[in-house]
Length: 279
Image (cartoon, rainbow, N blue to C red; front, side):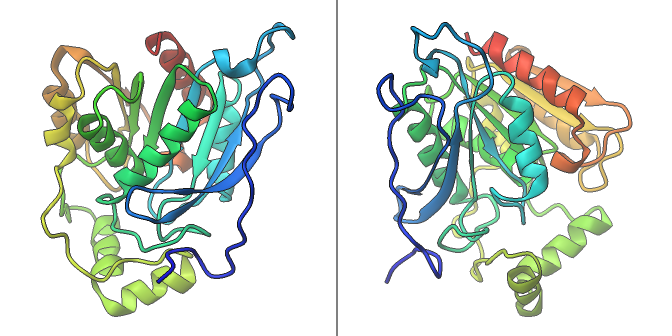
């Protein structure tokens, strides 16, 4: 049975090089390690280069969106535009989201989606790759860096949970209803364009706080708002404690949750941090 989304139309990918136009955005479906097709976009960025040198010398940012996002959502495109000022950008829709195939596993198998996007960035010639994830995507970049050691050069996790099954806030109780109840999954499918897997995790995946110590020595930045309505401050503090000396924690005053709450100034600071730490 095909894992491609309904209405899938294959699109070709042309690798950028000095003959084929290095500054042309690309869009394609990437295959994951378990056979899911992931809708993905590459943008070469806005950094000005010597015209005799290819733009693949600058870093690539691979952006992992939050739950119910997708590559075409305005807030994801805004984040991509902000990071394009610092380097190339790869955005993609997690499985079960938008036009990607499969069903969302809410942070488990999504590690394979991110890995496909990171590998694509490498295949396009980028020697330095930074992953930046928001909320669910924030947990995915942590687990990816732990499970695929050495594949990225810097990791930024924004508004991530530290532990699974958290229901301590009203938004998280609503999210658990969306994921675990048949009527909730219908709302997810038709209200949020998100197809959610009906089975429980088995086995339960490595949690974000368990993943963090395995990321070293890759540079790690944890960003969290002090007005986050989903995950209170004990979550980023647990992650920072687990990171020890190899991680940084930014607690942002007045910031809420994930992409919607990350203003242009914060995104610029994250971009600067990633370019510096990625080498």
